Image (cartoon, rainbow, N blue to C red):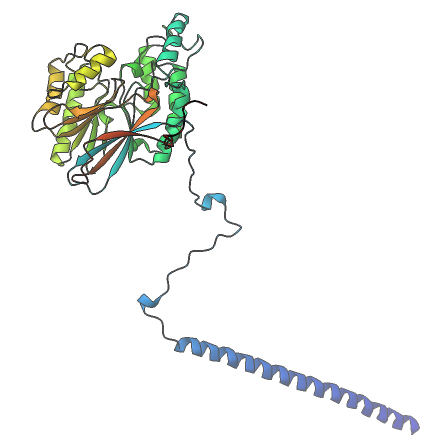
Length: 404
């Protein structure tokens, strides 16, 4: 009996404990369910509020913000402006203003010619017998008045062109004093450093660019032509730049009479410009003589001891060349300006009653040209030209003595 009572009490106590545990579990589960329901109700209420907000009209949508640059972005993804170095040498800018009808804006085009680059200082690239003559030309021709040689100047010219951000660049011939592997290598290095696309560069050659006078028999004229093709193609059919509102038409190798084949190419370029009603700017290395201004002959006699232009003693036209010159000199010419080099001295004037020519100073003097093509009627100074220094020179104090 005693044992049975003890067992029943023990069983009651066990069920009592289990009842308490079950009751606690039920209460906990109920609370969890209530919390879950409340959370769902809150979320549904928020979604309902979002649906009630009207979508803004198109014009009220704020502009999209540019995404911030994260640390994970690579350098290739971030466009940074290119900073071009300034030239060390204080170059002279020979600025010319050319008014053209119906231009929508001003165009700035750079001109470089007559650098007469010489880089061969030891036999190898040139014949041994040429070294004495080349050294003489190096010290008297390819050098500025203050002693900076063309091979040093070329680097600063490239820097100046890159800083200028021009619409186009014209290389007007005699960039090298003769063509050699060394000269071409330096010229090519400069070309590769230019910021401009190929369709912004016009390089017309002259006799010195193609000259094989000092290189010896191991380096042929055909080798020279191949080097020029490697530089920029040197395609006779592409010696022009279409600036959309006007056309620059160049004459390659203008120290010789134009061939029939080449004249047909140039004539088609003039015809195309006429069809599109575009003014033509004639680009040549050798200038054209003036029919109305004797000052060109006077300057040429002073600098070269002879008339150093077409229809002078060294440049007598044949029939085909006369056909080309007629495109320039006739009264109804499409040409609005002639640009030239070769004389090694600057000249600006009229070669006919309606046509102006500018002859640029040589680059070996530390000078590059800047042509400003401006809308006709922009100002009264457009018929003039002037020279300025790249770095403005400080005016001298009148009271300051020249002596220490």
